Structure formats: structure tokens, C-alpha cells
Length: 359
Image 1 (cartoon, rainbow, N blue to C red):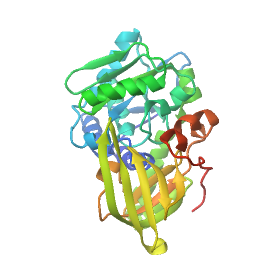
Image 2 (image 1 turned 120 degrees about the vertical axis):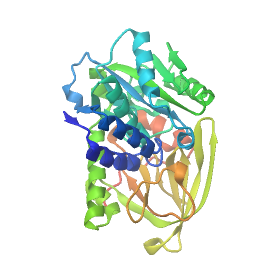
Image 3 (image 1 turned 60 degrees about the horizontal axis):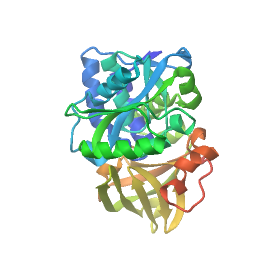
Image 4 (image 1 turned 90 degrees about the horizontal axis):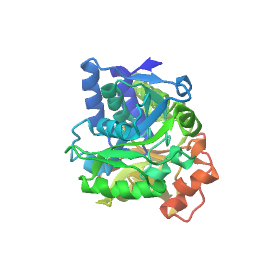
């Protein structure tokens, strides 16, 4: 076990922003809320997946909705915690630990807040290894965990429990509609599972990975080394493109932030153009019209100078960035996973990527 302190929180926020591939919500506001709880004496203890008894209950918690809404409608702060308690009341059980649904963005920080409020440990693992826009894309559901019961809660005090849904696609569809009615953002609790199921379906040690990435970036900044390359010293991947954002088309619809961002190349990419499509997260990158990266691999947009991750809701003209592509976790590259998280699941008629390595 290890504990989150203010230094670890700062690093994890950076690493989660990078692993979020543009989505998962901007971690900044969540970081401030978590920092406040730590300063008040609350504790966030991180537990290895192997340390929980097989029959202990674990619940995934986080936020649902469009990232653009998350910076316009600030959360009250207890939405995911109340969703957890609503799920426990309905199921008649008590969770022994919580886990991130996705390690990316604010949804890496939100479970820390729930862990602090509920005085529960947080598992060093998650259900995606990045961020994705829809619930059926979580490895818990891909590999057999029941999608119900589940719960949502909003800042007004509304709580909704799903007693039974047919599958994770129906959970996504119904929960997304309710989230939209709640104002476009809500806290969730789902994938009520035993620890044995969690170990079989989760992507392990991703919280530690986010911390290592953030540590590397912060150390590179202090030493005046290239913080973008420091990311690649920590995890496999490569620089895909360097340039300036020259156009952003973005709209919020059906609970998602959708759009495209266009980059004009600079340095080694002078004279080329990169266009990235996103649905909360970056999905596909085309260099001069040719697909060069696609889900489930991670397409990450970082500020050229300090490697600060730039999420889809804050993309704007003039940012000078480098785009990294990092390999997807192996749990996202199986045939059953690719049916849900591969490019064709998003409507792109291209082959899913192989693993990316080197730089």
C-alpha cells in the first residue's frame, strides 16, 4: 500500500491528463478538490489489486458526461460518492474498495475523492488504461462483469439506480440520456464486482503508471530537459507530429464533445497537416489525408514546451503542440475488445493498430 500526498497528486494529474488522450475530463478542478481534502487530513490509500480478498466487493466510480460541460458546470463534489452509497443501499452490500473506471483525465482523480470521503482504499488499476467515451468500452464489461446494478447522482440531489439492464450497451444508452437530463454531467458507480472478478478484468497498476509519467515530466521541467521526451522514457510510444493548432471544430451533442482539430506542421513536420477526430477522446489522426494513428492506441496532444496535456475541451487556435501515440494496453487488443473499442466501433473503416514502439 501507499498513500497519495500532495506531490503524488500533482504528478498523477499530469500523467492522467496524458493517458486520457484528450478526454476523461480536465483533471485540474478535480485536483483542487482532492488537494483540499488532503489538506483537511483526509487520506487516500492505494492498494495493489492482489492484496484484496477474493470475495471483497469493489465498485468503479467516476464522472459521466461531456468534458466541455465539466468546465462550465462545476460539480458539488459528492456526486460519485452518493452514487456509490446509492448502489450499496440497493444491493445490500458494502464496498471494500473503489477503482477507477478509466485512468484518464478527471476520472483518475474522482475516485480519489470518493476514497477519501468513504474512507475506502483505491485500487491501483482501472477499466480502460486510457479514457473512452462509452461505458461498454470498459474492460470490466468486455470480460464479463454484470453492468447492473449501477447508479448515477447529480449535484441537485437526484439519485438514479439501475436495477437491471440487458447489457452494457443499454446501460450506456440509458445512463447517457439521464446524464443529459441532469445537465450533461453526473457521478456514477457501476461494475459491482468481487475482487477476483476485478483482477481478471482490470488493467493493473495504471495509477502507478500515471504517477511515474507525471514524475518524469516534472523532473524534466526542473532539470530543463525536454519533458515530452521524458514521457517516452517512461512508457513506450513515439512522437507522431509537431505543429500549431490552426483550426478547431467542436460541439456538444448527446452527452459527448465531438469535433476535429487541425495542426499545421512545424520543425520536422513543416509543410504537412494533421487532422484529429475526437469524441471526448482523440480517436483517429490523419497526416495529409492518410490515417497514421487510430484507437485503441492513445493519441495524446501535449504542449511543446512543458508537456502539459491539452484536453479536447480546451483545444484552441495557436497552441504549439506535439502529438504522441502510445500503444494500447494488451487487454484492449483482443478480438473481443476490438469489437467494442477498435476503429470500426467508432465508424472508421480501417484496420486496428498494432503496438507502437520506439520514437
